Length: 465
Image (cartoon, rainbow, N blue to C red; front, side, top):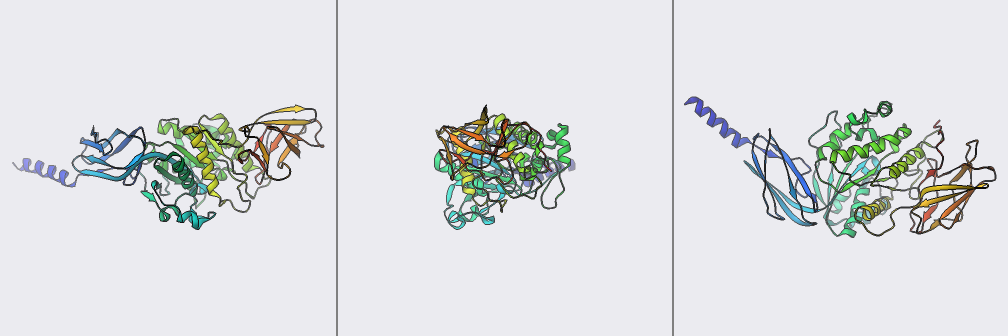
């Protein structure tokens, strides 16, 4: 009898103190990806509990079984709309309220993605005042690092208001605002970024260390008390916990902190894209920002140019990616240019054109090929169907070299949808470089005003010092 009463008591305690809980990303005010199967997951103190999930958009219960205290299941979402609730029922009931269904994007990177209106933004007062969009929602991930992969993170979904927007990523906000205006569906924006971080901290360490070159490059990163530099620690704490959350794609702004190992970026950046897609188990679109010109303290004024070249090569070789060029809106004296509006809008152009199939011009000119004729080189471009334009009187930032591999400032002129390049100092030209310095402020645009990317036609060795 005494043994029986003990069992009854333990059972009663489990009922009274049992708990069901979910990760922070699944909470009030969230946005779920529309027209898809989204995963809902969590934990319970009742190890083999039956869990029922019911969304108010269709009121169709989905029944699943917890295994060793962990549960997960998929529910089908309709086209964008809301608001809705989601009930999770077991030995207790949790109801997630004020849910919208629409398009969800994850923004990540270093300080230029992290940068908020409060940190510095053009026309800041007006932008904050106008940021009243109940159908746009924000989720900011608390900056943390971890040596091991985590299951959850700290953050909460909030409605876009002037008060919440002023402390959210400016780039992500302007990207999301542009999507909302064009798609007319709710937008969910997740910001998981940390200023000063190199790309290596955002990649799963086990994946990164499979490549000996990248492993060596990662270990050369200088320790810094203000931000992480150890491979994988941001991925573990700030990305891994949300890889089950269904999203439409990624936006990324990072690269400045890889000027110390820029040649490794040719491999590390596309590896990050590959790794994240594998973690989400989808070939999600990945749109990113080519780093802006800035007066770095460097010997040869070229390390950032190498990073930009690695970013260009990544776009050209990695499917379903797109790159925003910012060499016309940078600030040589401010590594955090305050024109975040155009950065967000240009990211949105890529998404609207390639993800949402809108018939718009979405990229500036990108180097395609070259042809040598006598003492001149004719350069051809992709994304030049709308024509080529000069901002100013003459094209700048073109350089040309011959067999000695010494680049000289060149003259250049637009010929239809091509650019002809030459210099009296180079009689037999072999290669052209455009805007290939840290501080280059070129002036070549397409007919829609989108700037041309920096490029080089050669593959010669580059000396950083």
